[in-house]
Image 1 (tube, each protein chain N blue to C red):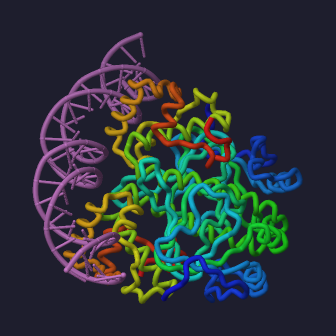
Image 2 (cartoon, helix red, strand yellow; image 1 turned 120 degrees about the horizontal axis):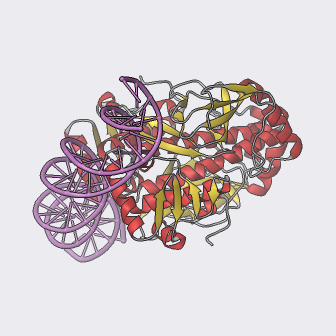
Image 3 (cartoon, each protein chain N blue to C red; image 1 turned 135 degrees about the horizontal axis):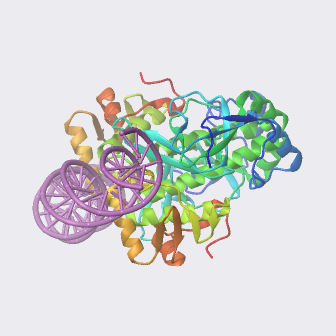
Length: 246
Length: 246
DNA sequence: CGTGAACTTGAGATTTCTCAAGCGGGGTGG
DNA sequence: CCACCCCGCTTGAGAAATCTCAAGTTCACG
């Protein structure tokens, strides 16, 4: 998989089929939204999709790959604020405002752009689209809220919760099976998401591995004992819009 | 100030003047929204406005007083997720979903209810209202994002940031002057918001008091050295929709 | 092979927590 | 009117969680 980074192939979108169906968007509206895509561009892994502090010109939708949003702090540390999988709207704000975080590609990604100028017309012409984007945004808010709660707990619960969420979202996005999903994140990424040092994160992870809860290797996450893991995490997938605990 | 807890006086809302103007709502739409208020009720301080896990029947707007949203954890601890001041929409979701947190009155409060059933019609009839509520929700998300970043930092920065935000929001809501606002929270509330133990919070607070950054007494917060405090907090009020650092 | 990034391990320093106790004001019942 | 009690605040001290620094290992890649 070798993209020339930053390349652009314009025109008809090949957005993933499930895009915005979660939010209940119907045919005609979906078509209108797809028509508003100005281009789909690719970025190579590790590159920055949109720097912190920029005034965004387009709404960005992740089509392929995994990406994250992170805040750069004055002491050069980073706090990861969100993870994105294919189908996710990255930073869907009703009114574009100067961003307080950067968007980074974790793997090679492809991203659909919808210029805010075009979008604005669409929003007033088609209230359903606005409503669907609001729903998406509300879901991201629910996820963020879980992260907030998680950060208040100890490192073990934090990591367990993170892994539970990853496995749900990644498998739903087609990045693997339920108990065996792709895991392109480095431990540094995870540490920055959980607000832990890499060293400590590593130890907690090993501990959980030893206990037979999870295993991470070769860029894959294997949930060995899901119910035990969910218990450690106090995880209930309802906030992701899924059925209650299975 | 003695309300009979839970009392309800129906009819014409006396919503605060600035309500939803931040979100750019115009006369006619505002009137429609006000007309949808089924009643305004009062709750006494310390009481629970809406328990965790309930299916909400109405949108709640805080008219008077201070309230918070908190998640109850299985070990009986709590994580405060949000603070509300008059004019705030408490948990404004596009589609009402089972709540994952409780709403509590910190002071005596009065709250306007808009039944979701009524609201739904309003949203489709008047897209501007949906848009305004989305904007409100986006603002709450930005605040929550700041809390998330804050939780990743040390206790000193966390507290400083919290106090900066409080002073901005409370004074904007008419709960005091810029450097001298009402502070009805107990140290336990603050500790639960910041994910710290009360004991540790107390020590950090005293330290900041000794350094001449802030003073809290008699239910009032006094920002003694705002610029120093903002520096400790790495605080930029832009996310609240205010002008950049002064 | 040589190199760099990610992961791992050790050990001491620091932050934060828990438990325990004392203080002080406001409200309440006697 | 007084005594008591509860809640919120404060302080001390030892325990636990987490961090930082430093170094070693592994593995993919050129």
